[in-house]
Every structure is written in C-alpha cells, then in structure tokens.
Length: 221
Ligand code: URA
Image 1 (cartoon, rainbow, N blue to C red):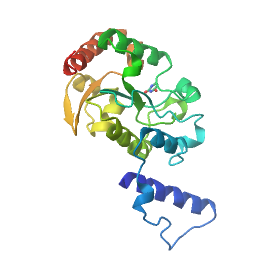
Image 2 (cartoon, rainbow, N blue to C red; image 1 turned 120 degrees about the vertical axis):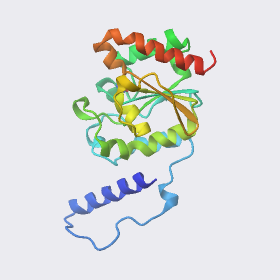
Image 3 (cartoon, rainbow, N blue to C red; image 1 turned 30 degrees about the vertical axis):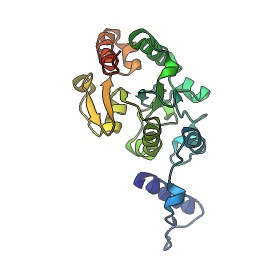
Image 4 (tube, protein in one colour; image 1 turned 180 degrees about the horizontal axis):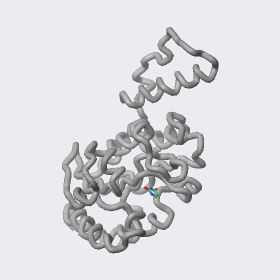
C-alpha cells in the first residue's frame, strides 16, 4: 500500500507543478486508507486499473492490459509488459510470443489457455517495448499483488528475468535461476525463459519444456 500512496502523492505533486506551484506547504495527499484500499474483486480491480494514470505509461498506452484467464486459476503466468499487439487489443500475450506461450500451455501442461491466468508486471505498454523502469514496475505492483491475492494461484510461472526480479526481489541471472522452485507466501514461483527469448533462441525450448514439466508435477498431473 505504501507504493500506491507514494505514487498518488507523486501524481498530485506533478499536478500542482503543472498548475504553477513551485513549493507547497500543505500535504497534498490527505491520508484516507479507505480510499487507497484496492477493490476486493477482480472485476472492480480491473475497472480501477483501466482508469489508472499513476505513471507516464498511461500517456502513451492505447489500452490497459490487465490480464485474462480463469479468476481462480491454480497457475498464474507473469510476463514483463504489453507489446504492440497487446496494447491495441487490451489482451496479454496475443502476439508471436503469445502464440508460443499458448502452445507451451496446451502441449506441455495439457490444459487450455483459459484454464490459467496470464498477466504482466506492468499493465501498460512501455514505448519501444523497453524494459519497465523500477518506478513503473513498483507503481504498478499493487495491482499485481492484489491480483495474486484474489486469484490465489498455487504456482506462479515468471516469464523472463524482469517478472522474476520484480516478483521476488532477487536479481540472479535467469539462466542460473530458471527451473528452480521458490516458496513465497502461499504460492511457489517457478522462473523460466520469456517466450520472446525462445523465438530468438529456439534451442532453449528444451529447458522451458523441463520447467513446465515441473509445473505439471507440482499440480499432481
Ligand atoms: N511480452 C510480455 O511480456 N507480455 C505480453 O503481454 C506480451 C509480450
């Protein structure tokens, strides 16, 4: 909640600056925990995220990409941030890397994409598909943490180093950490390579296959 409060405070200070204020002696943000609490259903959380202007990504986005899938999924996939096709459709992983992710879910986990939940570290597209900055990732984090709290997945598969890093706080190289299990809160994190890395390095598909077999095993399938 501290991140959300800081982000709101920063936004209000920017607004005052745009109005011509150079200094302010008042506390622009009056603490009101009730107001800051995020909604307790996925639908209302999505509604709130759709209107989010807490960081500069809201200025260049076409659509907020909140996430999609089974709201009670046992498996949650987390990517980095929406790309061009996701930005225009409002859906996560619909481009080439999305096609590959769907194949991985269907062919290895032997379930359909609609049985898992898929989202990203940031819900708005970073221009030029840049890696989200720490400020962007932390500003968006309350939405992700609330999604996790509401979906209550057993397993979280982080796709690529950015998702792993921002979910766990660990900045170990992805090649060293992939396929390892990390118990965190009520779920197990399994980091693996990002599908867009696999499109560039198809030989790494073998390792992702092994990582997803671990997911299957954990699910008792
Ligand atoms: N890459 C991501 O990390 N997320 C998407 O939604 C699409 C591409």
